[in-house]
Amino acid sequence: MKDKIHLACIIDDDSIYINLIKKIIETKKLCENLLVFNDGKEGIEYFEALLQNLDEKNIPEVILLDINMPVMDGWEFIERFTKIKNKFNSHITLYLVSSSIDVRDIDKAKSLSTVENYLVKPVKIDELEAVFNKTA
Image 1 (cartoon, rainbow, N blue to C red):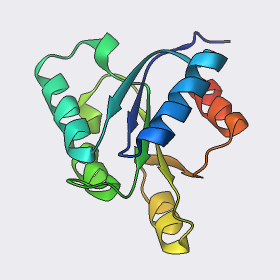
Image 2: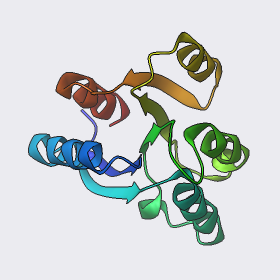
Image 3: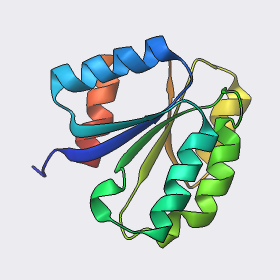
């Protein structure tokens, strides 16, 4: 079995969801460190800044991205992230996490090569463990 994930990233504006996911990750020891951004703009700015100073330990292995957020939503984040993701030497696995069960959202997510999978909130503990174990 590979090592535990070093760094994961949550991009979501729902503080209750973030706290819940953080608690599960800590309790289950799914990763060592966690970055949290409250909207897609904060998230994409982090990744764009990383390109200026490519430090492998600062590149998340997993991104849990919400779709509906103020400032910049998940779709806009993916659009910008797709343009830069191949500049990273690391493999970054992106999961869309949303309360939306709209088939159009799910189909759109699954049609994008950048997106590994679509998880519906509330994310179950075993789904979260599967994400981290698959990536680790």
